[in-house]
Image 1: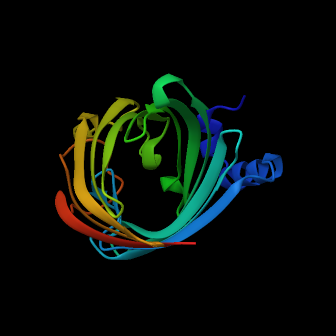
Image 2: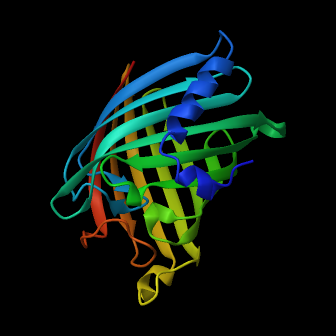
Length: 238
């Protein structure tokens, strides 16, 4: 089996994963997509859009056997005055367990058109219930920062009737090895929090969330943006 490091050097991994999933999926597989607008593109608490609005296109496929996959595309600003098209591909498998729980395992790959030094791959595994999830992610070269990382992710979602819901998230980014010499800040762990509310109106989903992140860890963005923000999002599913 090829290592994650090898996958990270192959810019076509996302296309290969999606193509293989489509070829192997049964006829009962469900296809979906969405277009979203965010007031600020925040990834694990860090703004990747310079605190500017972004548009994101997404597509996904879910097979009855438990296999799933998908991808998205959005604009990112990882350096001052520079914009990149970020494409993300992922694939995984969900295995049902007892008491309504399930085990989820998979991998993802992010590619930045025009600047491959930011490309990175992750593997993940975790447990999920009806309204919660716990996941561990591992990257051999996080955002091309020459640092191995583990990211612990815990999320909850509470439905309030047929339309409204509340959600929360806490994440912990842990640098493991490979920190660049002279950059002591990347050796510190970083915590991020997200809490908000959402409203589902037929095919339109509206969200408002407060997000914040501590300093430390390998930060992909070159600028020092605000550590907290109120983010508004609107998504149309088709």
